[in-house]
Image (cartoon, rainbow, N blue to C red; front, side, top):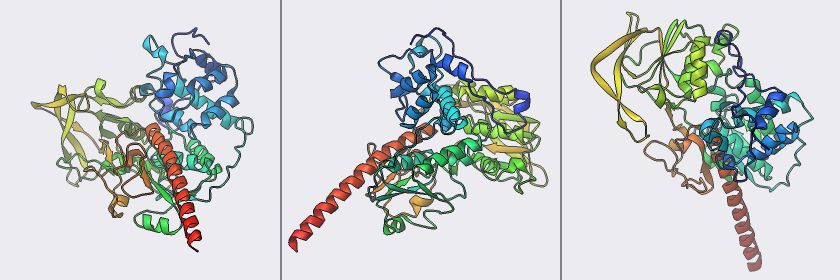
Amino acid sequence: MTAERKERFPLPRRDPAQRARDFDEVALGYSEPEARAEASRCLGCKRRPCVEGCPVGVDIPGFVEKIAAGDFAGAIRLVKQYNALPAICGRVCPQETQCEQVCILAKKGASVAIGALERFAADWEAGHPGQASAQETAPQSKGQRAAIIGSGPASLTAAGELARLGYGVTIFESLHSAGGVLRYGIPSFRLPREVLEREIDYVRSLGVEIQANVVLGKTLTLEDLFAEGYEAVFIGTGAGLPHFLDIPGENYSGVYTANEFLTRVNLMKANLFPQYDTPVAAGERVAVIGGGNVTLDAARSALRLGAKTVTLVYRRSRAEMPARAEEVENAEEEGIKFRFLAAPKRILADGNGRVNALECQEMELGEPDESGRRRPVSIKGREFILPVDSLIVAIGAGPNPLLPRATPGLETDRNGRIRVDPETLQTSIPGVFAGGDISNEEGTVIAAMGDGKRAARAIAGYLRTKREKEAVSASLEEGKN
């Protein structure tokens, strides 16, 4: 293939004035001609750096070539050999810092739009039922079962991989619906619920059972799972413990963590009040603290809930923001205001204890810190007041502590993350593995999926070895008799 066009085809998006007031998806996806034209830009290079840049190792040149040739069914079949959640990855994964970043075309121009093409292939399959993926042959049962705790991207990936290998798999989810952070953390304007349901149904179709409303560490323990016949466990419970500002006034009414705010919108359907009796009061003037994707999700959700002004307050400059550039651009188009080089100092309230203002400290950038970004330094005597009705704190989250605290012998680091072997992802307890945000700080959907895939392979190896040892032991016992 040869690249005839230097610039990529832009992904169509809805008009900002319309999309800023509803929760429908922002990006529209490629048409068939657009997808073929974009795919035709791929050089098909032999070194295939894009594959190395993909945490789950998708054959990117292979599926892109099939799209360019118009073989959309073949493209999605190939993708699904490596990735069980392509419609999700195509929408929310930061391809610009992974597969697209190392694309040869990125050296002199724009990389191939790998994420948009993956989304296209997955959406094409959904729009052509029965025409795309051939029915997968059910693997021969290994007669061994694995339990998966949590149902986010790491867990769904691990479950699908193990099911394909012939192991019995059950996912245990604490909430009433599966999906983990994909459901409670990402708004539907970025990840429509019907897309999420479709991907989860595909994992179910591989033979995975999902049990909701089961809280490991409360309803069941790891000991209970082993007693019930599960021979290995994967923990993928994510980062559900929000970080706080630790400034005066943080307990006033109208102050939310992004975790609470987004969960009430995404999972409890606060955006559909009064059809659902779970409102959330965003207010007319909203401030959101932080600079990541979650910050933008919260800010854009508040706008859609009726806020007249939404201001994102970030202590560094735009250049240091960890959020995806695409999402920053979408937010700006929709009217989100940005106040850079500012840090919250204290929260003020009215006589009823309801937040009515945020005092901020102006900052400047100093020397780089351990993250490589320039450290924000306060400018003495430079404060300002930002009038607000609501404040959303979106400065990150830590690992969910419930299961580790309830499991004797499960080692964690000083930040509460489960310690794992870097190669196998096995924990300090034999047969128990962990991945995703519960064990590392990567924090992206695709990185969590990469952990799930690695853990599944390690679990399969562990179960195989366990079975072999049991067979030898049984043989020796039989010889004694």
